Amino acid sequence: MDGKTRADIKPGMTVDIVLKKDQPTGKLTRGVVARLLTKSHTNPHRIKVKLEDGQVGRVKQII
Image 1 (cartoon, rainbow, N blue to C red):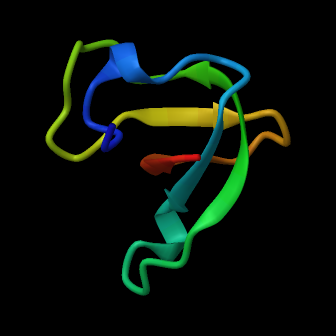
Image 2 (image 1 turned 90 degrees about the vertical axis):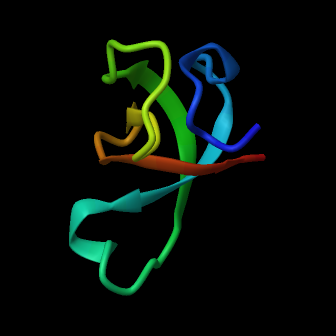
């Protein structure tokens, strides 16, 4: 599960995401998924999610 397929990610899961501001450095932020923002089944740039604390980013790995 690499964060590129929407079916692999569900609300309530703990994930590591890359925030937009952290894309150049690749710094990861851990949190719990509140909502999936990407509508398509797959995305080569990874699935975008909103965490419970309000942060938005693309899933790098599922914990």
